[in-house]
Length: 263
Image 1 (cartoon, rainbow, N blue to C red):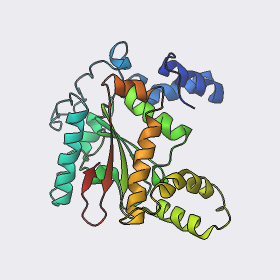
Image 2 (cartoon, one colour; image 1 turned 135 degrees about the vertical axis):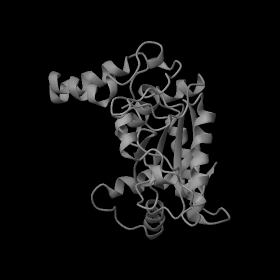
Image 3 (cartoon, rainbow, N blue to C red; image 1 turned 135 degrees about the horizontal axis):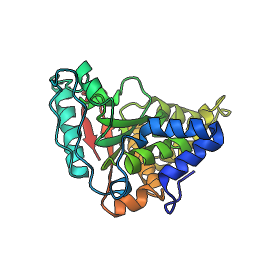
Image 4 (cartoon, rainbow, N blue to C red; image 1 turned 90 degrees about the vertical axis):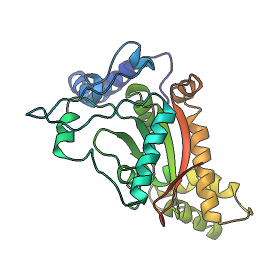
């Protein structure tokens, strides 16, 4: 379900939680997710993101705070700089220690939202050499979208105000490879909800049928493009992209090298 653009997102979330869990628990859950941590008014609807003001650990010796990113281009550069460190085996891990944990315990100001695959070989924070409080990470097999995935991405962009949304496919994606094999064999539908994944990934596989090059790699790239196209239909994400509040990009992670290539 896409959140209507003319409805307060915070009111929507509070109403949904209240109807499901009860008013008291719903309000508490929403508060825990970030209502106390996030700005209101102009900033909550896409205005300028406030600077990070993390709490300092006891003694006042907190980690050095990076300046807030100005836009999606800055956010993408920060991600790619981290990936270069990862590839060169020079990761700094600045945002993973106890001091960082304390610094972000009261508020979060992530600079990017990333939709990645559940593949255990693609841990998003490690790939970009980032840590606590840096990224909103949403993962599903083959980056398949459903209502909860789209809603989570909308929350990262609209509520947490990340100016970048990346869809990250990867080399030798098992979910897409399984879809190729299922379509080729014309076997009965997979058990459980795996069949849903096959159905969702099938359009990308069919789109690249007969094209030159590696069939699986082609399907991964096609799937990233299809996911981006679907996200642009969101009544939350689409208008924010058109207004220049968020940049949507696709990317491809090489398992062999650790390198992320932006489409």
